Structures are given as C-alpha cells and as structure tokens.
Length: 336
Image (cartoon, rainbow, N blue to C red; front, side, top):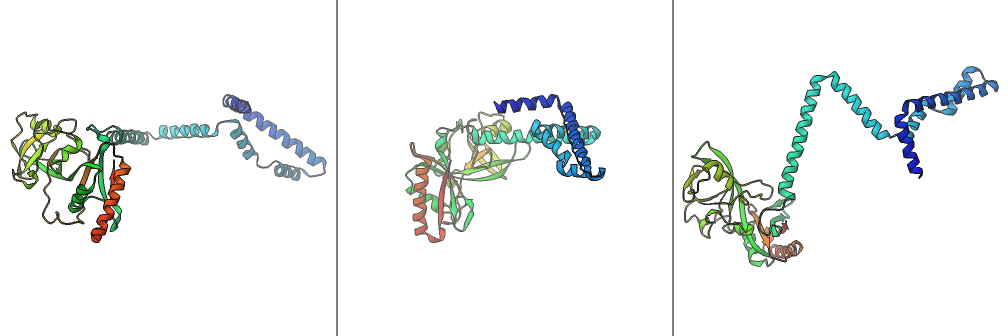
C-alpha cells in the first residue's frame, strides 16, 4: 500500500507540478523568515540573522531539486526535457535536422539489415536434411593459439579414418572466379569441394549429376555445378544447360548440373552465399603437408551422436596425432 500511495502522489505531482513547486517555495521562504525573526530576537543584526538561516537550512535550490526527485519521475522527466531541448535545437537548425533524420533512417536500415543476416544465418533452421547434425571441423594449433584454422589434408585423412562419430566429412575452399561469355563479365563466389560435399547436406542436383570420385583429378576436364540463382540470372533457366561450356577465369568449364533452389546458396562458415561449386583439386605438395591448414571441413554427425561426444572423440584423435607428429600439433574442434 505505501508504494501505491507514493505512486499516486507522483502522478498527482505530474499534473500539479507548478502549483506544488510554488507552494514548496512559499513554505521554505516562510520557514526561513521565521528563523530569521528568531535570530533577530536573540540580538543578531539583520545580515548575521539571515546568514545563520542559510547555514541552518542549507542549499535551498538543492532541497527543491531533491523534493522534485521524490515527488515525480526524474528519469522520465529528464528524457522529456532532453527531447524538448533537442526539438528546439532541430527547429532552429533545419539543415542539421535533415542530416540527423537521414542518419537516423540509415541507422534503422542498417539494424534491419543486420538482423536479417543474423536471422538467415543463425535463427532460421538450415534448409537441409538433418541440418542439426551438420558441423564445422576447425583446427587450433599451439603455433597460432589465437586463431581458428582450417584443416590440412593429412590430418583430415586421419580424422576420416579414425572418427566413428562422424558419418560424412567433406572438404572445401572458397574462391572467386570471373564469369565471361554471356553478358557482362561478373565475379562470382565459388566453392571448390570434395566429391562427397553434397552428401553432407543430403542434396542432389535438380539437373544433371553431382561430382564423382575422380572429378577432382580432372579426368573429365574442368567441371562446374551452377547455383540456382546464377542459372536463372545468367543463363535464363536454360533446361539444356547441362553439357554446355562456360568460361571461368578464361578457362572452359563444362556444366554437369544445377543445384536446386533450396540448397544452391550455401552459407559456409561465415563466407556468405556461393554461386557455383567446382571439384577441389589438391596440389601434390599439400597432400602431404600436415601443417597446411588451408582447407575447410564440414561434417555430419552420426544419428544419435551429440556434439560433446564428437568433440571428445576429436580431442582423443588430436592427442594421438600430436604424439605421432609433434611438429604438426593440433587440436580439432567441432561446432554446429
């Protein structure tokens, strides 16, 4: 009840502020005058009597402010006061007002865009089969403890051979290539992937075929799978696109398929969307370089396997590799 009474008094103060402040000032002046009269009766002169009153009562302005704070809603009143001051300033400076409004509009737009990205990447479930089982595998090295690295091909091969908690492990790298030929040259985002890359997502091309073992050896030349957006935008949704050649970085690539719309734009470890994928070609020197942590890895957990269990298994594998290959000491991490 006391809190309710206090709240009601503050509401009353908001609507009777000027009257209550006037009554407060009059009451404080009355008390000051009475004390001064008592001091005069004690034999003090006028100046000394009023000086003694000021010492007894303290700072009158401060006491009035304290009373307002107790009576009202100081934070709300401060915000209202700031808004009024800002409105007066904007009204007196129309040029600055226009700039401020534009800045505010841009700020709201940027916030909306950021949330859209976060929602698309983090909040909305990935449009892939068993997407909750898809994880990234990264490397932490004692040589670069402050960075999260990719994988080396030898370490990745050991993980594939020893990890029982992972159903599928795929490798990829990100790059950009310039598409020429039809229309204006365009730089597109490309992922070079291992043949089993689509298996992680449970995806299949809507046209043509996926990459096959041996495609990374370029036995069939340079191959490419087009993303749905790129297929629509640059090739007019040509249903006969499979088998045709396009030029990427001035090299001919044969189109072997088109990815479906639901999975054609992969969000890969913070790199954004991918317009096309090509087979990953590993140079011979990197195939044996245990500290060449330049390849990214994505995997799918086996059904019923938790992230913690997979991490524990990778910790054990990393410990074994560190013992076997001290110069390439790493610790592998999985993240959803």
